[in-house]
Length: 126
Image (cartoon, rainbow, N blue to C red; front, side, top):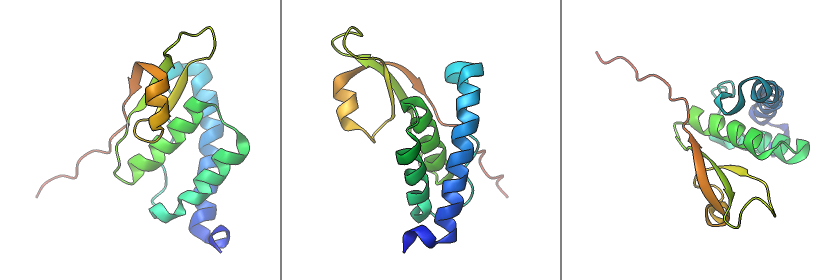
């Protein structure tokens, strides 16, 4: 069963730690906040990250920062998009999502800001 794999449990532990850190950093740094780098675990350990995200109800920006960090660790570089509702903010609040992961958000919201992932430095060439 996937829940019992050590890699999934490690991914969940990282996501929980990351959530606590990101909440603190967002209060202090705003949109410049970052999530700690994800550990070198296989992509198939993502259910651990997903479990933490689905059970602890992070805000959209917290969730996006965690997912972006996980994807970046797996060399998948996606921006976080921050948008406001197309009809204005009288009915809904702003929303943040990982570009390409919520296609419905791209339709419902007007982009106002992008947060690029922190890319790992390129390996030195011999």
